[in-house]
Amino acid sequence: MSTAIVYYSLNGNTDYAAKEIAKRLSADCIRLEPEKAYPTSGFAKFFKGGGSAVIGEKPALKPYTFDAAAYDTVVFGFPVWAARVTPPLRTFVEDQKTALAGKRIAAFACQSGNGAQKAFPKLKEALGITDFVAELVLIDPKDKPSDDNAGKIDAFCETLK
Ligand SMILES: Cc1cc2nc3c(=O)[nH]c(=O)nc-3n(C[C@H](O)[C@H](O)[C@H](O)COP(=O)(O)O)c2cc1C
Image 1 (cartoon, helix red, strand yellow):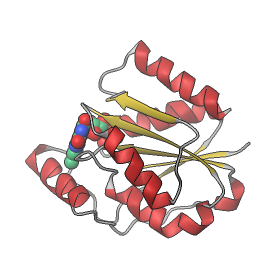
Image 2: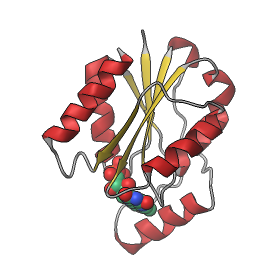
Image 3: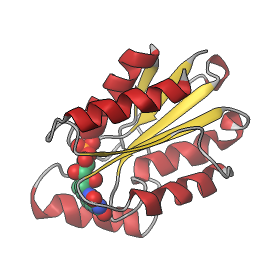
Image 4: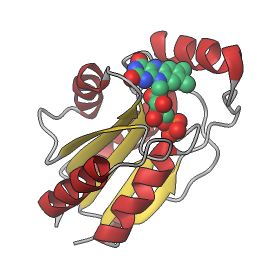
């Protein structure tokens, strides 16, 4: 079975998790980048990113390569922003919704506190599905490495094998 991991990461935690998952599943990684990058530090990071998430922006993305026909499973990864899905992923889902129909869909979220459980239903709604085949929440996995995170990643990947 072939798997794509489609994700956005501002500060590297989601990127770290995507690569750990990719290693275990031999999956392809597609990292989304908005044309206009979000600030990576300071007040502007929370102000711009948080504001963009709250108003439900769908920012234009830099060109990416994703051939939906090549995959039967698509794993979405995102950092939680204001208890929401990060905007670049919203753009991708809108662009690819038709092509994603019928795929096995899983999702993981990185956060520093909470909000993923509010964000997941929004992502399902945007995709027009009621369930993910697997779901994973990690606390800042790059900045706060832990055996707990590694074990959760293992369990998530086992479900998808
Ligand atoms: C704009 C913004 C909003 C955030 N909102 C939340 C939140 O609602 N809940 C939470 O637990 N963490 C929140 N965070 C923290 C990130 O989700 C968390 O640090 C994540 O691991 C970062 O992933 P990344 O390094 O891939 O960007 C927010 C971070 C940013 C920049």
